[in-house]
Length: 363
Image (cartoon, rainbow, N blue to C red):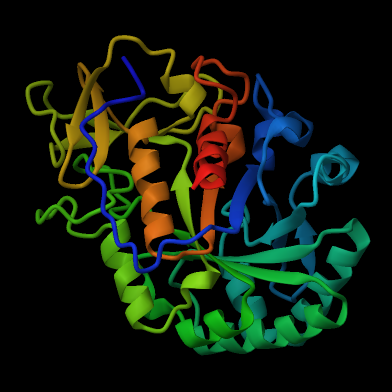
């Protein structure tokens, strides 16, 4: 099995081609508790411009809530040590999926001022350069979110901190896009996992819509809608997944995109999350057959009843080319701890992030 294939299809529009500014790399602090852990100190060789620490939540009353004792005992401190290596920006993400979204939704709607002050105090206390508000759900009032982002931007400006918002690409109607574009320093555009179900196999992050029900929504179709709604190109970072999405096929004989599935695939040996496999976990599995979905500019792999959609080097380069050709601010890597931290795949450590650095530096 190889993570590289050669049947590439590049989409080129030289009107917007320019040098990108951002390589935004996420860290999920759950990785510190894996049997083979990944810590912030492992990222000393990476070349990201921004690092985002996923690890804090919020109460319904508007107070910031630390989710793990690891964060305050050593996680935040190890994360801050990354500053020794480069002129980088360190963010903390508010609204981790471990915390759920209801408390953040309630705090934004009913405790806006308290939450604004709590975030500002927290950033100062732990020496973060900025905060990312994670709103990759549709269970909130977009007017309340817009008011919160406005107030938070004003407060952070006073203490020289930055503001990022992470969004789900397909939930365009859930956001006041004009407000996000005005007040956020970055909009991290998570354009993957468009179906959200495991009833049939689907490309994790199709670059283009292939005209079928399994991939009618894509990176290109969602970004086009956001830009038409007024999103600013120079604020958007296209976030690519470093992980693979796994399925259990209903039948070994039906193994293409859109094949019927009975549920998520078996959890990875280290990450232990059903339906997800880290890059370093997948590349050690040698029995898979590789296939391409050229119309969607994606690849998938199957072995028996196991089916995986994951980025290859080729599909990553196509997405990085797309970022350049559309004049976006940059890319995001979700997450570094799901990338190949120890060069298990023999392509180089943190290959997803390093490929972005090499590609954009040479562009």
